[in-house]
Amino acid sequence: MNSPKAVQGKADGTVGKALEVLDSVAAYERPVKFVELLEHSPYPKATLYRLLQTLTSQNLLSHDPETGTYSMGLRLIRLAHTAWEHASLAPIARPFVEELAAEAGESVHLAQLDNGQVIFVEKLKATDRFETLAQVGKVAPAYCTGVGKAMLAFIAPKRLDIVLQQQSFFPYTTATHASAESLLGELPDIRRDGIAFDREEHEQGIVSIAAPIFISNGRVIGALSVATSTTRYDLNGLTAFKASLLETAEKIGAQATSWHFPG
Amino acid sequence: MNSPKAVQGKADGTVGKALEVLDSVAAYERPVKFVELLEHSPYPKATLYRLLQTLTSQNLLSHDPETGTYSMGLRLIRLAHTAWEHASLAPIARPFVEELAAEAGESVHLAQLDNGQVIFVEKLKATDRFETLAQVGKVAPAYCTGVGKAMLAFIAPKRLDIVLQQQSFFPYTTATHASAESLLGELPDIRRDGIAFDREEHEQGIVSIAAPIFISNGRVIGALSVATSTTRYDLNGLTAFKASLLETAEKIGAQATSWHFPG
DNA sequence: TATTCAGTTTCAAATACTGGAACCAGCCAG
DNA sequence: CTGGCTGGTTCCAGTATTTGAAACTGAATA
Image (cartoon, rainbow over all chains, first blue to last red; front, side, top):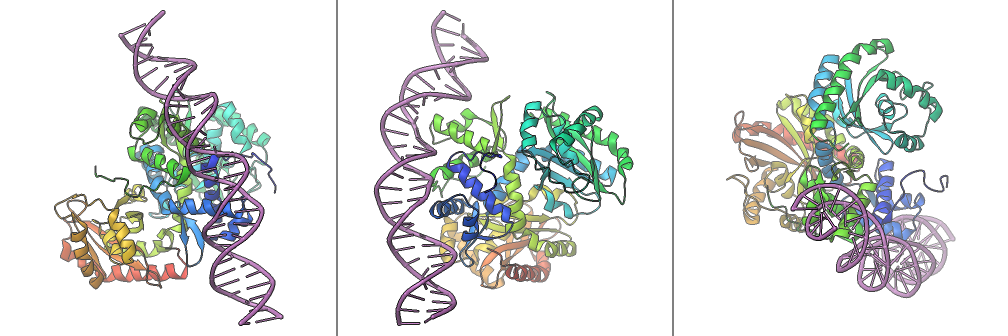
């Protein structure tokens, strides 16, 4: 296949292999049959079979005997709930995020970095009441999102190197950074301003202004953004949110610090 | 604090053990130190240590070197998102649930059964805009919730036996079923009416009316409830929702069927 | 300097995992 | 009906992983 080894995720041990399989099921985003998985799997039939069996018996996958398909298991949702509630920034940040969303009248996103990807742990849309739910847990690339760049600009150089390796630099739009160099060029500006913009880099017509969130020892633990569409605000217009965005990020950081947030 | 008791402890293989450890970290609902885990762990120091290391390197746990504590990892949130979006009833049911919530003006809960526990995959509160988010993924016992009983009443006898084993029958309130027999006594009524009530069995002052959701082959795949507090409705009052509740459950079932929902 | 205590590493033994191959369906075509 | 598929499951010996007692760090007390 394409990547002989080590783009990321060294699959250490049995657990690693099992998770690899779990990920591959997740990637389908629908129930998959055994053969489908087998085709794209590095493991022989028997091995894959038993891996799937283990995952199923652990409720990480569910297997429908009628159609012979595997889908993601409910146990994940249960685990994630405690992860979200006790180990993400979301519960700490909630009141501040709400306040900002109400004040700005636009979507506010709270994100953290996981394995080089941005993972949204909270999304509030001031206008719409329900839409938001579907979005928590969603992932996006770091190199082409406001929150992603805000975090990249402030992580330790050593960690940055690793994270850069993990970026695909796929050109979603014409504004997307298409290489590490291009991205690196922007980071000093972000460091100077303490603010990052998404200039329709991930999705045409969507822009955002983002600020990193720090804990007291100076480490970035997440980022916060106000996102909107170009039909309502242009990039200059977005700077109107800069002050309250920074202030909110500050408050969240302080709160996280006093909570001994792992980071 | 109830007594969960690892009844169903078949920890097959390394993966099983790793997940057991993951669960035990989750149970703390806060960052935990190695020793704390060791004390309650059946595994010797070295083994637990390596298990934790594996989980951490897989991002299922995160380890804070400063405080030496472990907490749940972000990868779980990412995985759960796809589980929720592509393998739970929630996305299919969403429009119907919203409609019902708006019409009833009370909280509507959508739940599925996982390993003998009720897991809420959607909670909408018609009044409050934000509260809802924190609740998705939450678990509750099956034997003392409306949604739980609605499902138990209709699952296959063989499966019911297993599920009953998994119940703690902890008496949360004076109305809680304190034994399998007591619970079994109520199930025929539920089967007859197609409706289950939570008569403040889980929490003082909280009542609900729940209906099971079936797919075409007759299997229960979830349950739906309207929940409220005794200050606004008594049990009789709740029956006002019966018709629209059943209708909504029906619609969701039909939709799930046509989507080939795994169940 | 001695003494814990928490966490990490070692190493041979124990075990669980591997995967080629054989084995069962069920399905379809001849 | 028969023989050849294809998708799925089980066997079993060889081997790679995991195991855990014990030894080791290294920091914090005493």
